[in-house]
Amino acid sequence: MTSAFILIALALIVIYAGPTLLFMCVGYADYMLERRRHMVALRHAVKRRSDEL
Image (cartoon, rainbow, N blue to C red; front, side, top):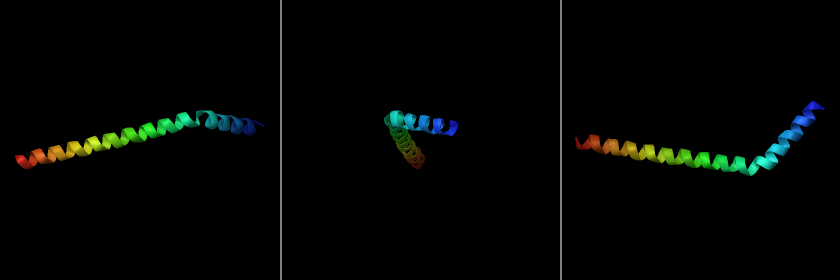
């Protein structure tokens, strides 16, 4: 009985929070890609500066 209640509760959470969880995952992925792009640009700038010296 308890496991059925837990499964029903989890199903309701996934159904009602699904779009919110999806937006959170997409937002986090976008944040990580933007951070990676920034780190690559920073690395190129440092490399270019060390080549000039």
